[in-house]
Image 1 (cartoon, rainbow, N blue to C red):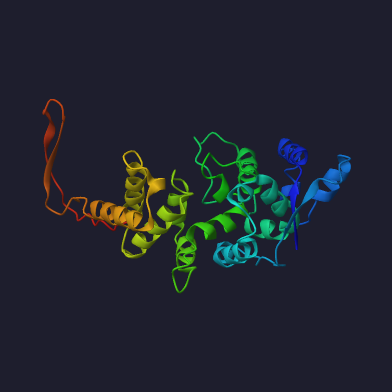
Image 2 (spheres, one colour):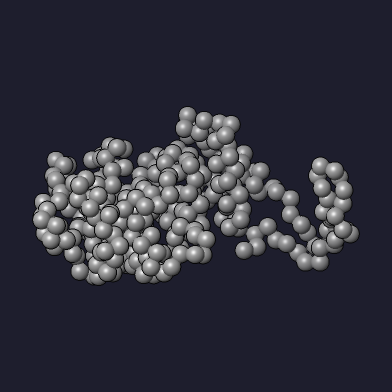
Length: 290
């Protein structure tokens, strides 16, 4: 199968016209060819010289993500360098042309998405739909997340970051990554999200602790993000990244929690002045409570 890129001028036109094309993005029928014919630009793509094995994606919802990530990664692995794999012209072409059926099946833009960008509650339903088009068909997510939010790029990059060739099952952590939505979202919103060594180390550490709550997971990943302030994370080798994650997990896992019968008071940590009377906890707070 030959690999094509969308021409930059065509990509710019498509992004500019998202609002005008909103109904088209809600259609099950592919419309991109007619759009560019109407623009008098029917040759909106160019050949890259790259060829990959023929493949098809499985239609469906989130349950297909792991399988499709393997399919895309195995097709493109070794065919793309990091610059090519970061080029929206490739992924936009695939999303609008070759994989339109998959995109329509997996990312219906009028359906709330658990990876939607947070907003202040002032966005209209139409604005939210526009945002989903920008995020899933283009690189419209906030900086750092775009490559793991775009509908096809996320499949390739998620597998690339989690593929462990030293493992008898090299896709063990790819499957784990997709099976834990909290982990997927939390990791991909961090600054280290494109550091394969660190992502793999974090996933291996998280898999050791299946009893962690959502808050525990976010605390661990936040600590890993904060570690970047004192450690150049990109220079860590696999062993160093693993040790860092193990140390941070110990810190996160041993955060004190309030237990039944605990007595405590609030006070100003500068003046030492107490706020109000002492309090006694009357219910048990489990560190693994959701």
